[in-house]
Length: 185
Image 1 (tube, rainbow, N blue to C red):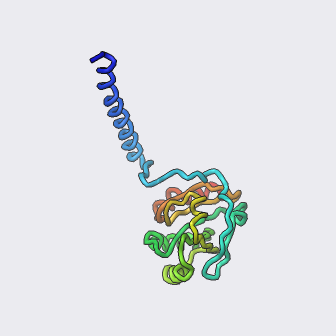
Image 2: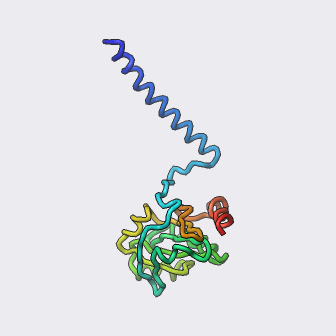
Image 3: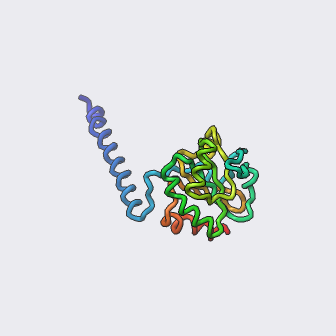
C-alpha cells in the first residue's frame, strides 16, 4: 500500500471526526448562551418586503394584499394559523393578550375551510383586525412558511424584521418580540 493511500485511509475519517466534533462543540456553546433553536430555519424574507399577494377575506373579514402592509401606521404582526392546528389553539391566549395591548395582528388562515375557520375563531377568540384565507397554500410557499402557527413582525416601512415558527409564548414575546416593538415603534 502506498504512503499516499495510507494517509488518505487515516486522514479522511480523522477529518470527519474533527469536523463533527467542531460542529457538536458549536451547538453546545450556543445552547449555553441560549442562542440555539434546533427548530428554527432562517427566513428569506428577513430584511425584505413580503412577496406580492392578494388574499380574500374569511368569516366576513376584509382580506388583504402585500400593498396593504407596505407602510403600516405602526409595526404589526402577520400570523399564519389554521383551525386544525393544535399549537395555534394554544397560541390564541397570547395573541389575544397582544391584541388587547394595542398590537395590530392580521391573520392568514392556511389551507382551511371557511366554516372551520369561523368555528375556530368563535371557539378560541379572534385577535385579528383582518383575516385572509390562503386556501391553496401558494402564498404561504412564497412567504417561506413551513408550518403553522408562524408569525412575522413587519415594521412601519413594510419590511419583515422577524419570523417565529411555532406558538408564541410569554418568553418569546418578552425576549424577542417586545424588543422589536421598542426598536421599530
